[in-house]
Length: 53
Length: 238
Image 1 (tube, rainbow over the protein chains, first blue to last red):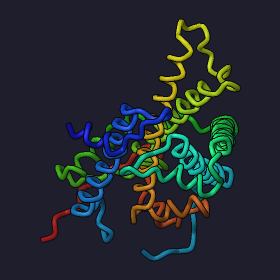
Image 2: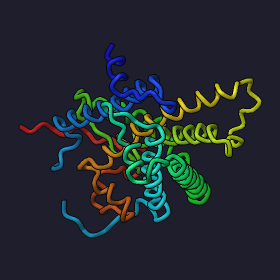
Image 3: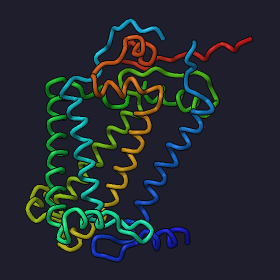
Image 4: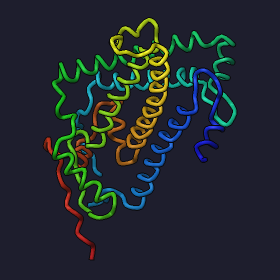
């Protein structure tokens, strides 16, 4: 359902593109952005090494 | 941190030039590739519209030409990188994750999840960087191969003619794989960029320009041996 809605937004009906690539591509990039955002938030709350030790 | 002015060499000039040629080639490939793909964002097609405004209505041949030249710069650079770093500098095994790296990764994961306060100093590259490097290598080689498979002039470079596959089938799936892998590559670049510009990594980011990091930074952030080094949990303040 969500994929369908997203692919309708991102879909261009021409020979160089298809729904499958739009959907998968969007999910892959979104997963990467979510992963780095989670890392950023967690490391902001809990920095890896205190600067002064 | 008091800096003594002493530095540690991290990348030599060939490695730095390779890195930035890669970035240049990838940006051209991304721009021309997304124009060829004709990316649609909320009903607009910004890449083809930009190319039409810049070049005129017949922009496709130029885009394909640029895409091809940038691909050769990327793949040519990759060959030089392999010859230089493995053949001349003899670096290979140290770039693959070791068992010690995997153990260290567990400590890092526990620290990330807040289970433990132990941390790890890695040698030149940590396991995440090594995995990302392998990911880049696999994805770029596959994108290159699928790119060649779509080109009438260069498909001979990918020896799959003996497979009982229909030409249209190969063309269709090579394009799908090329496009999907491009999105994987974009994701890898996003991750690489994020970790590269994090505050604690800025000196290593700068070393991709100057080649060097301050000695004090190097000693604080990197293991002194070829093995990862455990940093014990800091004592609780009373």
